[in-house]
Image (cartoon, rainbow, N blue to C red; front, top):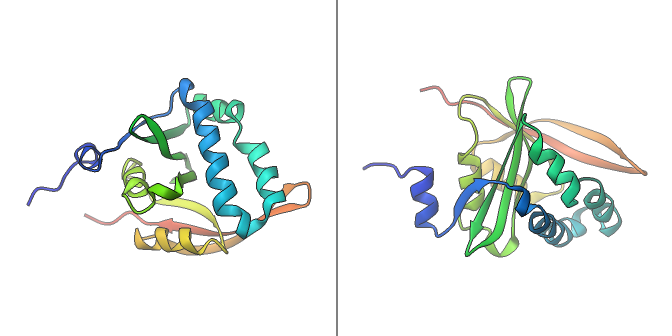
Length: 173
């Protein structure tokens, strides 16, 4: 049986994966704010959520990241609306995932899997995930990631990121 390509699978699921464009930034920022407020408030509290959104999820900051040639920034579009996105870059011989978010109403539809599948396959994948973010940790484990370490990162203003470092190794052919 022939395996579907990412493009075929995306079309079959009624969504598409594409590169983020300048015209997407306001909608992408709004999506990030909606996801973060809903998902992360119970985990880290509303004050830290607002702080982190202000630092890293405004349209201007996302635009700087989009224009950074060292980063790959993709999104999922469904019915002409942005539903999910991923941002990665090559770091120390791995593809480091900086952001991977799927709108709550779209989780379980294969969007996260499609975004992971769009990343380079010649490098191991690595990321940080809040160690109390059980739902996301379970998602990554389903796709072959394992916890390889822990890190607490001071992000300023009295806030920290208390994370697991997770990695998915390259499978030998």
